[in-house]
Length: 81
Image (cartoon, rainbow, N blue to C red):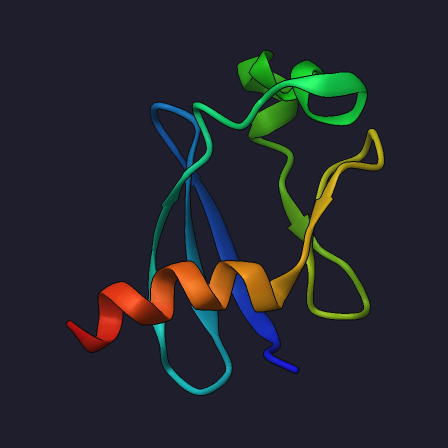
């Protein structure tokens, strides 16, 4: 499993994510903020409260989270290019 060691919110509902193996990049979530858990993240103040949980996953105070493996697949593909 891939472990995230740093995450920063960016404008436009994007995140900059860094993994423990050095892979890093930006993920655009603007088209994915729908549904009960993710729609509240359209509030820039809540989106900006992004953190990393004890399992190395991206999370927010409302309980929304993103699996590190999925983020790695997205960023890793761009990183290798």
